[in-house]
Image (cartoon, rainbow, N blue to C red; front, side, top):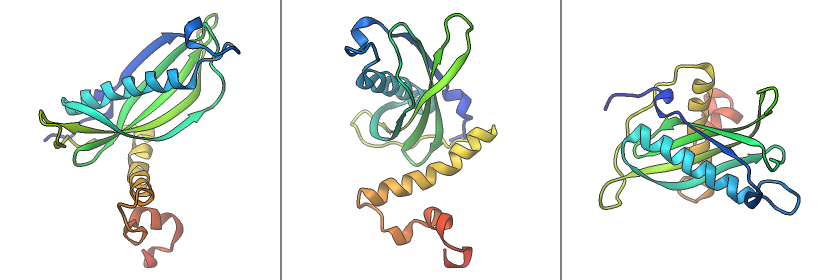
Length: 174
């Protein structure tokens, strides 16, 4: 399979926060935002793999500041790294000032998806070839994040996590 650029998986969703999306304080429900993120990042993973994908995990979600009723919210997702059948998708969330048009990043999340065949079994996906500095940074960090997730799930011995060890130990001890 030929490697793909992260930009080939770029998925952009724009929403306006309506009253039924908010809590009594007029802020967007966190669960609503998570749902928007899941759908947007799933489309990104499908674009990369050209397969049906299932959400394997939500590795990190950061809620920077409240999103208010009537805010314009833009979600941008790209595959940051592809493994055998799984893909890490990084999603950035922006709000837009409706008068000036200035966008401010307020949230981000990292989702992991697995491409599946017609029987629901994992299937291979193309590798990623990062191009920009941000894509390269996210690509490099993806292996560390995967190792940490596997350790926390009890599926990897910490001694085997070479990428994580490089963060904390001198090279000769890795």
